Image 1 (cartoon, rainbow, N blue to C red):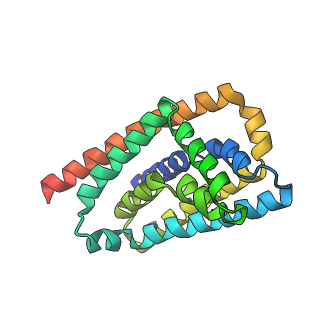
Image 2: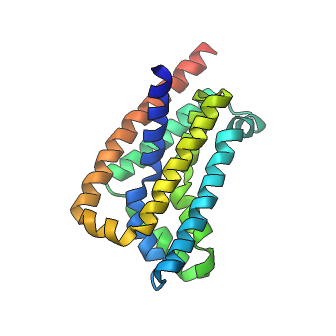
Image 3: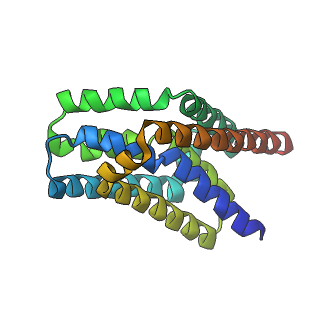
Length: 209
């Protein structure tokens, strides 16, 4: 049962940090002027890039940390604090404002064919929060079977984002301003609690090591 609880925790953490519903209006802003086929291509490319980035950190996150001499306990605390800041921004609606600014910059500075990689895949889907969460979860799900389960969870979360991209216009219209505000704040509170748990686990690891 503990294993399935860990998987559920991993799913909730990644789904909240990636925040597929919150990406819908940003996706529409980034693909303004495109037809449905072009939007689908941009969404698919962005999803594939984000999946590869998060999978890389799920598989080799510990090695990347070791390369810089960072312990998992220290990273759990740092990652937990980062996730808590993201949760704070979500609760007080600062995260969307920051993302919208990123979207506006991309529209003016990047050619339209590159927006799938930046800023859509990185940092809007596979951002610092999602990467931090992936490395933290990979430290908990360390054996081969658990790691495969984590990659499957990443795939499900990214697939959810792609579905949201395909249905972006409908999702944005369905949620409306009030719905987006309520959903973002609710997910922010959940993420804040998970972030505190990461910090607590990190402190425990440092004390016991």
